[in-house]
Structure formats: C-alpha cells, structure tokens
Image 1 (cartoon, rainbow, N blue to C red):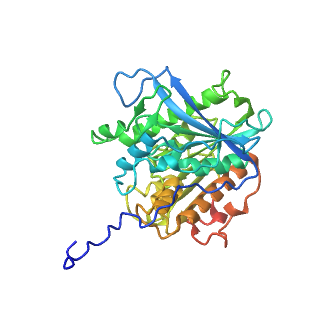
Image 2 (cartoon, rainbow, N blue to C red):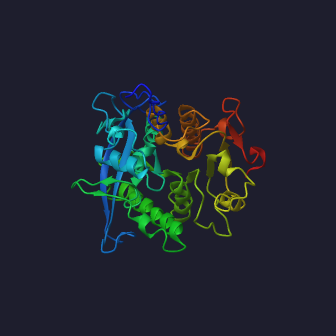
Image 3 (cartoon, rainbow, N blue to C red):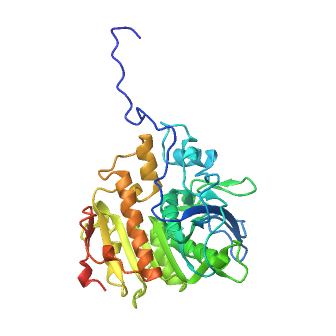
Length: 377
C-alpha cells in the first residue's frame, strides 16, 4: 500500500477474534445427556409444500438422561447444513462450515437411564427457516433434568434437513409465502400435524425409538420459538395428549375457539415486541389470545432481548462476532430461557411448585410480568 493511502475502515461484520470452537453452555441438571436422531415417514398424508411428494418425511432429534457422559459428543450441524443456514441468514464473514464445529454436551447414542413410563416428554419446534439444532442448548438442559426431549425438523420449512440417504432439503415453503393470505395458518396447522404424528411414533403401540417405553405418555408439553411457538398453541388445540405449552416470541395464527383454551400456556418474549399495548397488529395477537386463555397463564417479557436471544443462534453469533448485538448478553438470555422453561415443565408435568412463575423475581430483573401473577387465572 502507498504510504499516502488511507487504510480502509474495518468491516464491522467481520469478527476481530473468533473462538477456536463455538460451544453451547453446560446443562444444569444432574444427569449426563444422550442424543440420537430418527427418520420418520407419515404415509397417511402428502407433504404440504412440494407437489408430488405423497408422504410427509421428518427428521427428529431426541435428547434424554443418560447412564454416562463418556463417549463422543454429538455433532451440532453437518458442514453443509451450517453453510446453508449461514447463507440463508446472509452471513458471509465467517467460514460457512463453522457451526458444524460447535461443541455440544450430549453423547451420541448413549444408553438412557430411567424406569419405564417415568420420564416427561417435551416437544420442541424451531422458528421458520431454522433447523431443529438451534434449540439444542434448551434440549440438553431439559434432558439433564430428567426429561425426554424431541425436536422436529419441519421439512421444507428450514434452511437444511439432512436425511439418512444423503438428501438435503431446503426451505421450499418460502416459495409459496407471497401467494396470498393463509400462509402462516397453513404452517401452524402443518406443524400441529407433524407433532401429533411424532407423538404417535413415540408413544404408540410400535414406537420408533427403542427406549420409548421410558416416556410417560400422560406428561407431554410442547415448546416452540417464533412460528414454532405459535404452533404450540395450534398443537394444544389439535391434540389432547399435550398437557401444556410455551410460545417463545411468536405471533400467533391459530384462532383459539370462543370457549377458550384451558390448558396451561406460558408466553415468553422480547419486551420490544410483546409488551401489551404496543399497537403493532402482527404482535398484538398475544393481547387477543390472552382473554381466551382460561387455564393457568403467564405473560413474561424480557428487556434487552432480540428474537434470536432465546435460541442457540444468539449465543453462537455472539461467540463468532456476527449478527446484531443485543442489549441483553446472550448467555444471560439463555439462562433466562432455560430456567423459565424448566420451571414450567417442573410445575405442569412434575407437579413441583415453582415460585419463579408465581411472581417477579429479584434474580431476574430483566423479566417483567405483563399480567400480575395474582390476577392471572
């Protein structure tokens, strides 16, 4: 460079220093965690997004309490899945395969621990265009505390799903989004059908997972992020096996009948979008739905959080120096998410009282009750 030239300003999108390996936080429970993946095929219905595909194919991941932490840690994403996810997000400042190096805490195909029909089941549904892996930190934490967790890749609704035969499907659903009203309603209805099929496969007469007998079919909850959160409500309405649900930062689309929804529901979202009275039609769905929640209900908002703060992507983006910077540190946001989800599961699936969900806590000043606990149902 000529000494008279002025150096170019550094690109703020490019991290000045990047950790050798992105990583997920350690789980909080006493159990080691195992994980495995399963391919499922529902021949009773066609795929909703691709014409000519006469069966709905799904990939799911299971996490569960394990006998031992010895063994190889499970991969987070494949290199190709990482490349497609980052490309879909418009991120080019880091190597495309970097998320495939993420260090997880679960042992691949570890032997489960537990007695027959004793473990609660939590179903996870990710946001639109996001793979199931983006909820891994939450899944590992719940499993370490004694739950079986199943996360669903809703095929053709995310950046990449890899099947056992090597096929990698991408987000074909997005191609139909601009074709008129009813798109999101179709998404949540399809996801509710996916969830019911997965429950059939895990709790039916011929379960697809060899250790499915550990699951207590009377204790099932669903937790979702973004459109996955909205789908939790659709699934609660469609499937009586689901006892309770959590909508994390998702505007809702499934109409709740006039008679109301009597099963427990937690709304957990960023304060900037989901505080009462914000006046944005797309976000005011919580206020519309609130009056129709006739059972246990809580509406919590988190100051300083972004939409990604409730998922692994907030953590990993922060470690890699990419993406928007949230006011609330990513590690703190994940602590808040995991602690409140775990409390909800303990309360509604295990019957353990949870003061954290009764009233605001001094330990979580970032969390505000949009509806005072004493006036909630």
